[in-house]
Amino acid sequence: MAQELSKAELLDKIEKDAYDYEYNYHGCSRSALRSLQDNLKLGGDDTLVAAASPLGGGMGLMGEGCGAVSGSLMAIGLAMGFSGGQDITEAAGLYRSVAAGKLFCQRVVQQEGSLLCRHLQARAIGRYVPLLDPSDYPRLLNLNVYPKCAALSGRIARLAAEFILEQREKDWADAEAENPYRFRPQ
Image 1: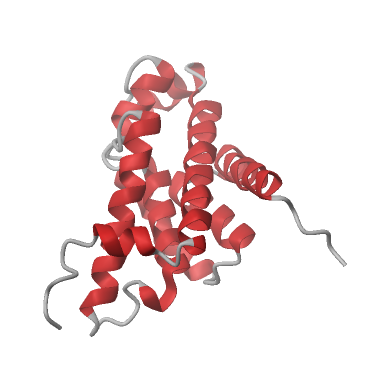
Image 2: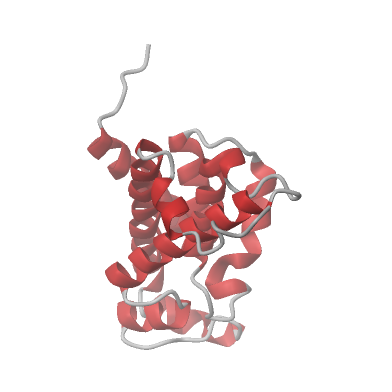
């Protein structure tokens, strides 16, 4: 029988797994999502990982929204389950899920300074190098971008795991309290 990990060990494992996936296989969005899926037993399958793949590199290599944040937001949606937005006909779950996403994104900005890939990359390596131009790829390698993006993916996955574990303990009460639509009649 496998020994249960302590909370600290679980968080360390999530961060390390996200780092390893990003460093070895690339795709920050899918790396964060897969680490969270597997370690927090969120369910889902490889289809979700495939769906997260184009979000990498700041959404289709555009340097916009951080892929690790996007993958983590997908994991938060999975963690919320039916109290989130799974039932497309039920608005209250959607609003709770969006409110949880807002709270998580605020934590990312507080910890990392931005939600934008281009800003996070500039902070990590000193400047932004566009990912769309294949001729820039050698420059990215010379700037040692992969270990730095992998470390960021790990930190963001860890932050998402902390958020999910905390909200589970509260039955997502913070998301409900932050929900601007909670007074809207159904």
